[in-house]
Image 1: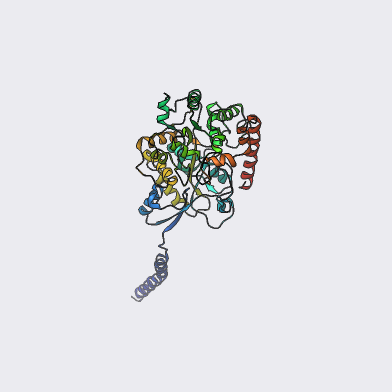
Image 2: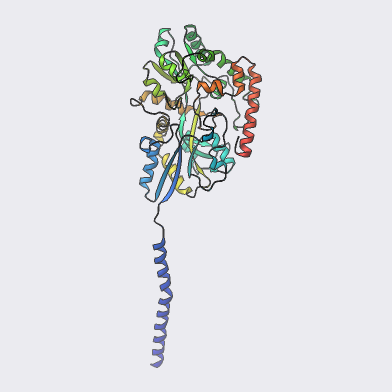
Length: 451
């Protein structure tokens, strides 16, 4: 009996001691739960708009991002708008858009705080990827097709956010008055040249400036390319026989710079495009669909709405040509502390494949247009979407600091090699000098992350 009582006492002590050992764990668990932060995870997204700070409610991409935010209460998203990644101290220096710059600084240089997702152009992405500043995205590029931007090795570096393809602008009444066929993407170079000759013979001006972008298009029309598939080899490409022919074709058939040098201009700025097109002086122009001028008529829709006689058409590419579009996209920074959540957002933005090009067309239009007087014409938007889907990123588009092909830049800031061709110097020799400028620029940018 006494033995049994001893056993009972020992069991009771064991249970009490066991309970004492368990209590701290329960208390620690409660304390840990109470101590957990309820603050949402913060994602910072940096978007570029040529108009500077934008209101999120007037921009479809910002609205899509905010919709993701609403559907994920555990996430808080901050959208930062920047006008460009150019250095504000260089605001009065004429830096053409085909020059490389070491912007955004916080990615090229060491910085404590960087955005989680940042809007860049393909060449910036590839340079920053080589420097280890952005992450490849875990996405199936075969499913996303033309909606992603890839590295030379096929890694997905970003999803496209803006695409501005080149298109043809033409004055319908002028074309009808001299019996010309409407411009068409199916035109070959001979048909385009023939139309230009008839327009000039009838006393009408043409706007096709000699820029790195028109040179890339015209070189492709002659069966060549201005850079190899690796994106860094210019020798034998930008100074090739096809590129020489392309440059000579643009000089012979494109914009006569002297016509515009002595004309009256707004604010002492020479503006042949789009003002002359709207006023009826220019009969045909090849330029981008968006981002023509930040403070004036800055998109195809803006231009057409100011003159009902202006039509747009697909860029003629014939059998070998390409449409070199100005492309931007969203990339994931390597320093992001919220990569999983950032990837969820990027996947969310590409979830509806059926509307991606339509959405991107709207993003691009909203970022480059101050205010449209009327709703966007569905037929015109469809044509621009078609050109977007067929385009390739422009080989020499380096950043968004200056997206225009403004006439004053062609006259004052173009690489001297291109200006030399316009002045009548040998095109082959000029392009050889242009090639070495690019090789030097790329070496500096790859090795040092700057010009």
